[in-house]
Image 1 (cartoon, helix red, strand yellow):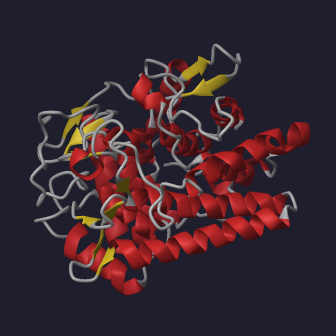
Image 2: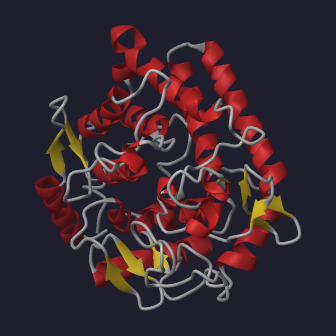
Amino acid sequence: MYRDDFKRIDEMMRKKGVFTHEETGKKYYTGYEYSTLYDWDQYFETIVQLYLGWKTDLARNGVEIFLDLQKENGHIQRSSIGCEEQLSEHVKPFLAQISLLIYNRDGKIDFLSDNDFYYYERMKKYLLYWLRNPQNYKGLAYWDSAPHTGMDTQHERAGHWYDCFCCGADLNSYLVRECRAFALIAGLFDKSEDEKVFTEYAEKLKSTVLELMWDSDDGFFYDISRVTGEKIKVRYIGAFATMWAGICDGDMAKSMVENYLLNPREFNRGFNYPALSSSEPGYSEQYLPGDIGCNWRANTWIPTNYYVFEGLRKYGYLKEAARLAEETYKNVRLIGDREYYATESASGCGLDPFWGWSLLAYFMPYESESGYDPTEIAIQKNDKFLLKDNNK
């Protein structure tokens, strides 16, 4: 990362990204000019903040704001503000992972244990809402809609508002990571029973993903319909979250990478990697009839590039990961800080400028060179976040 990048994005983020939550008075960070705090965005935005040497108070406040919105049954809306349909959908499973980032930076997460473990208990309750939903399919959690996935326009795999049929390979991979993160947090507080329970949830969910979502004929992970129990044969970038979560074995990862990720008839396109495989009928840089939200078709998004990058490194594809890191960095630096990018034309889309998760692109080459992975679900000292003395 170059010094002018470092200074520029730090100034932009501080000027444009810090807002105050009206109900609580807490300051938080978001990459969106309209001030909405989103669920998984916050996880990736926290990584950017920590690389820039920021304190963890904004990230902590973001977690608290979501937990303060919790209903009695454990449900939490997935954004701080939004339409009725959006607010009815449960927050994506990243709150424990954000908290683990905070702990690894500060060496403490007292905000979870304060006031007789008020926020800890809320976090456990939100995670159990995902895991114990009686409508889950054989233990697999499901998305309510394509917008709920965060990949807004992937209706062919996850439907529209209230369709509630798609058990996502992405979602259940995130949940494996979230259960592991919460188990570590429970261990930090000597809550051995919770540590055991959530470790078991993670392992059981991993086994179920392997059993039901892996297609041995195609050599790919697919979503499952909770209504029919059948695989939803749409190939999308989120399936590679199974690698990020460490669910694959080596042979599965080999098929995913060599037959699909690196295949120009699938994901190896203009600005790698698109949200949908180019073999899909819905692969388009333009919106299709009925699309809702931002375009996740023939479009490249930096957070999924980032976790594909981490998954590649996890399975030993270091050269491929290094190429992805350098390509992502160079393209973003050339095109500019945009919300997302058109894959085939390698052009910017959405908010301009954007000071959210797309800024991860600036740190991927550093991680590739250093071998550092801040997303690892582990207790680690994250002194490598401090780049001020290390950047070029």
